[in-house]
Image (cartoon, rainbow, N blue to C red):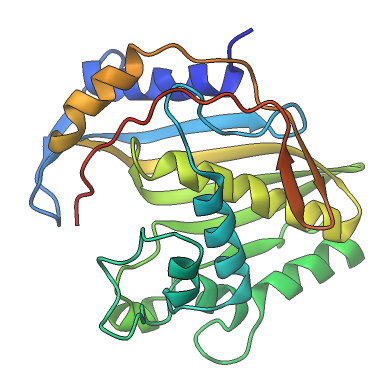
Length: 260
């Protein structure tokens, strides 16, 4: 049985690449590379059934695992990522490895005023599970100018349903081929982390991509991936903040240039 998650992901790529359902838009962008974009696409996955990792092209767990740990630590210097072999932020950091008050800073010290959003969400889920305010917001207009790159994923909201915990995530900008596969793995880790801390079962992740795009210099790689076989849902265990993939069978490495 092929991966349910990967089928949904490939359908998104085809939707943009072929313009199959809603009109696709050729756009200029900040990078100068140019892209094909669509508005308001999404993915819904059942994290209790499988871990969202692609099999049709090889992904590297040390990348999303190190980025997640870096994110929840509140750190914003990339040196600890580099020590784990993760170089995805190299092009944006300054000469000392600093990115400014980006993702983790806003999570653990919003607006540099000491507010820890992660702890607040954990407390609210445990003490007021029916609340509609289990929210993490990484978008801080007051500090955008200090950031090397404003957050692409910027909003999370949790929903308690009995013993299950669901999560909605919002991305303002989604590089579907290079960025989104690793973003989805990070989102899954966030839900698993919060669920374990609150004694709940991680269930559903619903993600919305406001501007979903494929860059012009990725077309060849996207076509290669769309024509590649993919394999079974990847099973996993998660305990004491440790994620273990059980049957991950990746395909070949398919590379594409990053639009900076």
